[in-house]
Length: 359
Image (cartoon, rainbow, N blue to C red; front, side, top):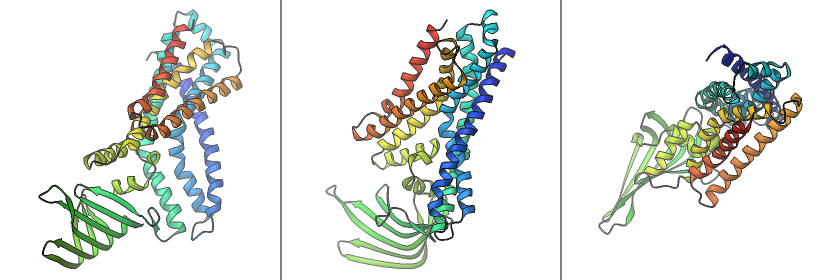
């Protein structure tokens, strides 16, 4: 990047960061108001509400970054246009495409920042925020009402009813299946434990262990106060089974999709979330470039308020199309790749055509 590229990128990044701060501040205010209904329930206090709000802000920043990038780029380039700096840059022989590349460089840096936040900062903080809120209200809680969680691990089905703090799970039932000579599956063993804790990478420690093995000759029971149990199901998979896809990182979604496919389970909704997350992250770069034709085109003489309104409008339309396809993709059996990349492809095509037509 030369001096001119750095100057343009600095303007775009600076205004984008300002817009992001404003948006997450507003989002944090609404989140804090939402927490008020829980204050006083159990040990959940006002301090806990403030902590939960603060811990959820990185997740909000990652979700709002594409829209913030578009608005920030509109304001940053608009600020250059208002000072006639863009006219000087164009008079020096810099083409619109060349300027779009400089803006794209700023978008790439913002994209890298968004990936860092979404992958490494937001997930653990958001998970901790949920723990503060949940364990403040209840000593322990049920994963999914009376049904609990059901996960498949090859020929084994595991049911977990409750979670306590520090990765301790209560009401664990394990059903082992086997295939007979006719190719039919039958129940081979039933295991119950009052609670389980993660002992190692792929090992649980089961307390009050009771197991009944079934065979053609009868049933054989075994009891142990503590039993080590090998399984591929770890804390990440248990967390994925009870969390919304938006809470997980891309790496977490990838691992969970792999687990579902390996066990022959339906993974469409998680694949849609996985590819849509990647597409939304990459849209940060395209959103940044979309500001260029607006500044040189019909909004050249418009004020900052007009650019911001149009930026918010475009961002809302893009998000709505994304959400609509994500929600309907699983219902109508659409391809996860089509659901995730169609809005991104449309946005990229519109941006490319608009830049090419700008003079």
